[in-house]
Length: 322
Image 1 (cartoon, rainbow, N blue to C red):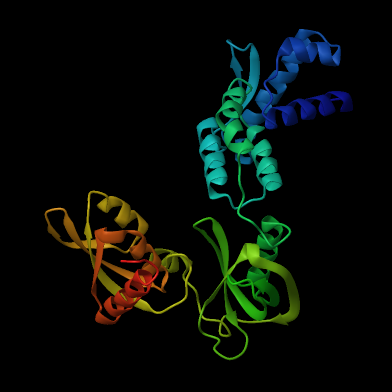
Image 2: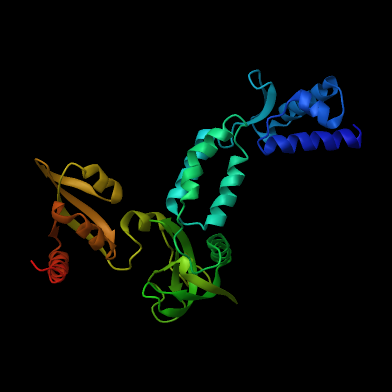
């Protein structure tokens, strides 16, 4: 096969990868060749894909009689409906800057079919226009995440310069353990290098302004093993605190929303529309969520947590003339 033909086949293939639908007639006009020559090129590509399934998987060039063109079908890649779902999740999360979101969205849209791309554009254009990102202190969430991920993999100690929730500027030397996403934010979970070294600390990635990577590495024995899945089940809003089993009564029709919010929750009793729920939770984030449910929730156990809720409600009452 001559070099010119090889280059043409590669170019046609990469155009398919970018999501283009390719018409034999248009390709013939572009390359100043006969339609028969282009058809032979298409057949060569189809034969290559069929003969090398161990490399490309179930990938083939499919002809659409309606569009009179070929497009690339990849069984293991994302379908149009999957792409739409992912883009909707990214928009709803609000975690990326507008520029990052548009870049990611445009790359994903490149893999939709030519016929479905206008539909996708129409579905998301208003959401993209009104997109409001979570405000960031770091220059790029993606860059910061990737730097943290590499340090976690290498088990490299780092120092972060960080804005706390009260906007106080703090410096921490850490052993990074994991990154997680929940409730609109990415979080770094890490352990101190000095003092209390076995207690996990949570830092919002978007508030990390600078990261210094040190030459010192740590081992598994230096930092406790960390179960991200268990933390995700038990912790709300990534607030620190102890693990405890709580019980509360919930009155209303949205009990499924409660169970969805608290993965460890289970109904232990029901009396009409009042459900007694038990859950294992970390930290004080659960208190914020329970208070947000208003009169629908009454905490019943443990006693120290009941007292915490009463104290918080009394403080709330002082804010109003009741």
